[in-house]
Amino acid sequence: MSPVYKKGTAVLLRGQDPRKLHNIFSSLLNPPAPPSPSSLTAEDFASFYTEKIERICQTFTSLPTSPTSHNQHSATPSLTQLSTVAAEEVLQITRSCNPTTCPLDPIPSAMLQTISPDLLPFITTVINGSLTSGHVPTAFKKARVIPILKKPALDPSDISNYRPVSLLSFLSKILERVVCNQLSDYLMQNNLHDPNQSGFKAAHSTETALLAVTEKLHAARSAKLSSVLILLDLSAAFDTVNHKTLLSTLRSLGICGTAWEWFASYLDGRSYQVTWKGLTSAPHRLSTGVPQGSVLGPLLFSLYTHSLGKVISSHGFSYHCYADDTQLIFSFPPSDTMTSARISACLAVISSWMTAHQLKLNPSKTELLIIPGDPSPAQDLAISLSNSMISPTASARNLGVTMDNQLSFSSHVTNVTRSCRFLLYNIRRIRPFLSTQATQVLVQSLVISRLDYCNSLLASLPLNAIRPLQMIQNAAARLVFNLPKFSHTTPLLRSLHWLPVAARIRFKTLMLAYKAKNGPAPSYLKALVTSRTAPRLLRSTSTARLVPPSLREKVYATQLCSILLYGALLYSSLLYPILYYFERVAFGCSLLGVATADRLVRTTTWQMFYDGCPS
Image (tube, rainbow, N blue to C red):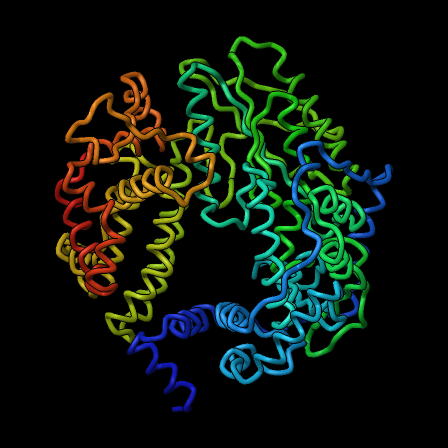
């Protein structure tokens, strides 16, 4: 038995290192594919990626327009100089970064984190020198691209079946993190963020973005209005960003002086090389785009599309964005005969804005959902976009969740159940070689995480709709303890401290309502809940309850799964001791210690939700 196998087996049996356990699990069940028989070379990939971007840019007939400074930004304090950072902050950022190693790194990132205290003065000097001079070192502007086959079943000889994965040096990410923190603080302090952009922002997530969208759709159905949800798709969005337009946008947001020069240096002179089968291509220059795989890239892209929201709102549409994923919502009376024309006109203006900013809409991947107002039948709308027709679909995948035109999420439950069942089957194949602890780590990271992803969208669905998910959790608990199929699962869930699926949904909804009331939470969620204020001093004044929805909204929340209304109703129905407990969790942690408070939270929460949580 080889030393590597012995070490891997020991890790599997102990289950003490989740990351290594997950890697070994993946290597056992998904062994690396044999070398591709194709004759592709690293230079072929580099030329293909460069020519692809050039072809997209050649389709833009008009020159990119530079955005003008907005009046509301004229009085905004400017960001003229990036502040230098202390060594302690650099050390904290270095240790918190994910230690992904790039071929351009002289030493592995994990080793650099280990010896960072010794190198801290030198790293701090390099970072502060870049911030004060407004210049980014040339070595930090190089990327190494590795092509990865999108799916194992695809033809490896077709170059279009590969996805480019960009790797940047570890030190460049530390510098970007420092700048990203300062830029985010500036935008937050001056309220320059787009409130409907949820990508890569604190307290924002795909779940909060989807909640904002579904709340608008539910509200429209409550008002007997039909709605259209349009999911826009962009082709190579991050790679076609025009640098002059982006720098002009930054200037309109008050970024000038040395700070603006730093961003200009950051974008200028970037290059990449492709590594394939041990060989590396020649350097290729990047004249457009923001670096993929970078820390600043997503934030810069969200600023680049900052003015798109006003274009959409001017046509009476609602919208929400997550990075380059844009969702349009338009509600209308079912009897409106001009809906198709209004949607087509709005999409035409959006397409013109995209062309002016060198972003290419992909009509073939843009999807359209029609959510009819109850009890009106679904309408068949014909929408044109860039000389193409977009036909309505019954369901569409949106930020990892399958949404249907009835907002029942039945397709999503089916897809999650199928993927979890496949994962449980694979774990069961190697269960004889795993300890109980190792199995629990695998199941929680691979299966339970899928059950919890955006599960607040399933709030107030009938129990029979989420029963398949509960059956998956029961099977997962039996697998952890290696018990037969029909074993009773209630004591197993208690032992694992796993709330049942319905209780997990209620708990997530409660936490979202609590955060929307007390923070941190996105502004669009805070606007959906209201604290109850008593006209006079009552014993219930200190319970900090929310305003319960009206009688009509209660019925609507039960029937149509309005998440925040359901959360407010559930939040307001808690007994005073339980609510008092939730309000004092942070105080209890400071008195009892983290470990004791964590056990108290898990035990009390499990008992409350499993035995007596209101439904």
